[in-house]
Image (cartoon, rainbow, N blue to C red; front, top):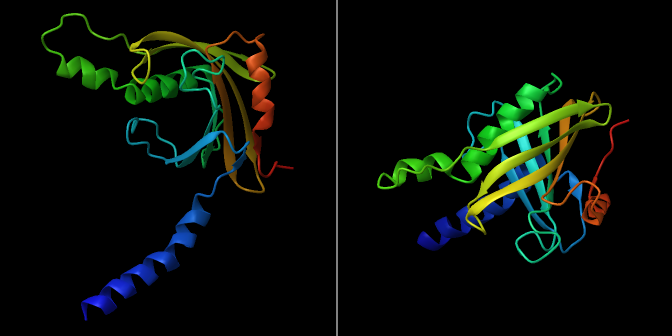
Length: 195
């Protein structure tokens, strides 16, 4: 009886996996040496971001290597149901929530009661132009350097009536916008462009 139950559960799991995979299938194409990740909204570390959909991320091969030109260089798409265009203030609010949560700033400040020096929260500044948004973020790097760094960011958005999705594309790197590393983002594309 136990063997039949285990076999049934295995077959059931295999049967339902494609359904979930299709619902949140990757929307990006990138070279094989780029790491990937999909995160569903609401995001566990930033539940304040009130979007429905998912985030599709691609990390440049050297993104985790502090000696690489690609350090902290990555891109992501928010593929969401929101129909309203982004504003500088909304984007700033979302990115503050996102990076404070990702870096655990509030958790670290609450946990370290012995130290009177608290971690600074993320500081974002975005400017809107015809091409989208560009900006800078001062964030605490909890993953690698355990220090603050400045990340440069480009954000483009579009609404696709055909797919009924708002597509918010972000490219991020600590390198200045005129650095050659920004050219690598040309290797990452949406699987299906909206017409």
